[in-house]
Length: 129
Image (cartoon, rainbow, N blue to C red; front, side, top):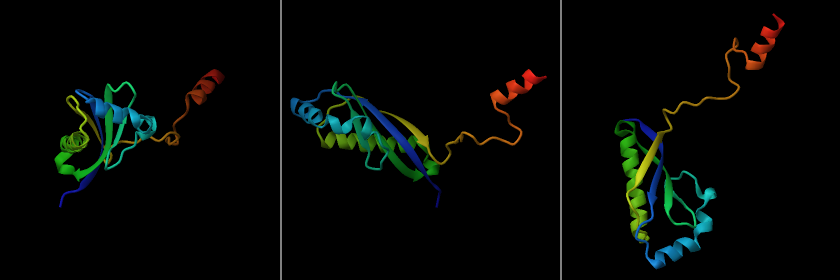
């Protein structure tokens, strides 16, 4: 069995051909889909604003590492497409950005080697010379 990787995927799109009914539903729920809605979940979280021009979904996708980021993006786009279709929301082409959380490098602040000096330390040492 191949290793599983966790991917964070952002799927972006543009509203297109929204019916008056769909537009009214989106506007009625807009307060629940702003900045605070931007969370990565398996079900996906939809974010958009009152202008109803662009939207984004944030997904967590767990799949085989061998399938790679391209497959994770395709899975997330399929989930977004399904949601939009089921709700009758017209849209243009979807694009996705994928981050493999298992291979992501994390730089921690404050974790330095014993010989490392800060800029302040280095300049004060030079001033004393």
